[in-house]
Length: 95
Image 1 (cartoon, rainbow, N blue to C red):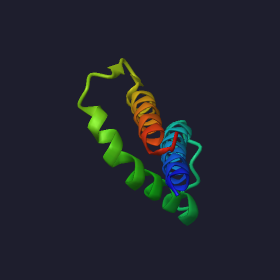
Image 2 (image 1 turned 30 degrees about the vertical axis):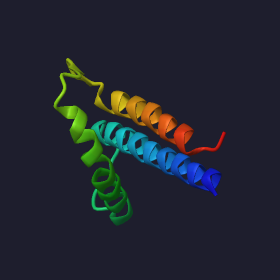
Image 3 (image 1 turned 180 degrees about the vertical axis):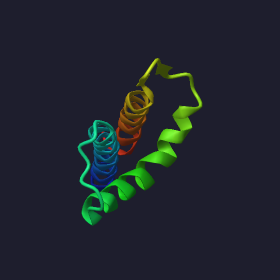
Image 4 (image 1 turned 60 degrees about the vertical axis):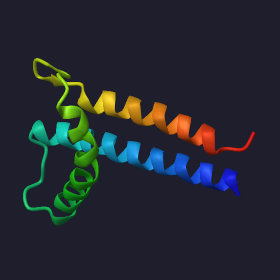
């Protein structure tokens, strides 16, 4: 039973990490001007990823993690998510 919960939490952390990476990649691609205007699917995907990722990323945007035009916030947020998530999964997992 505890192993199932640990697996679920690990999967949840993985999906959230993928959402953050997807948001960063799409934001980078669209900043280069590769966006199809008025595409409902792309707009819906961007809105979803922004709404999912931004609350967590806002916690780290207060820190001085921007070096010139390079924003290290998503990298730090993903590292913290993976480390804390690994600790939590390790505590839940039996033996």
